[in-house]
Image (cartoon, rainbow, N blue to C red; front, side, top):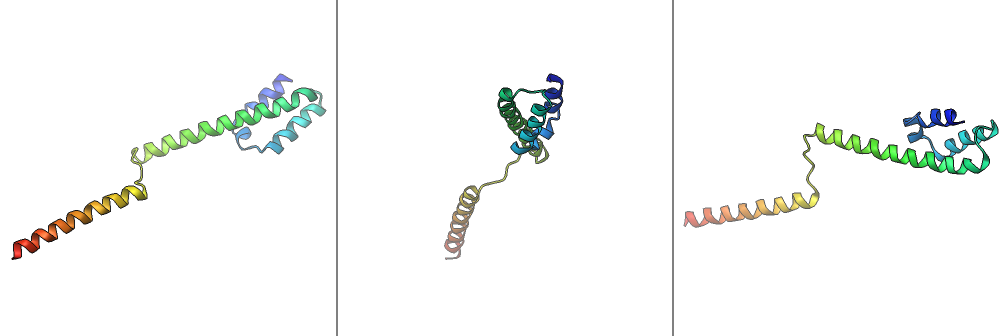
Length: 105
């Protein structure tokens, strides 16, 4: 029984992408074969779903890390940051235009 469960868990990415229905179906098959008891089947499904969610989170974190390394850890500016920078540039432009008008007089 443990060997079968270990093989299922060791699928790794298979558990990550498996739906709850797929996992329940597989566990039901284990119950039918007598490798898992009815009582422990619910706990096994919950455990596999939890491990799948943990693995998914780790994979997402690694992907984010690799994407950050690929970008050189430069993040993209938000709309608010861009709007603030644009406003600052517009103020500087207005100040320079005013200086030019004053210099022409």
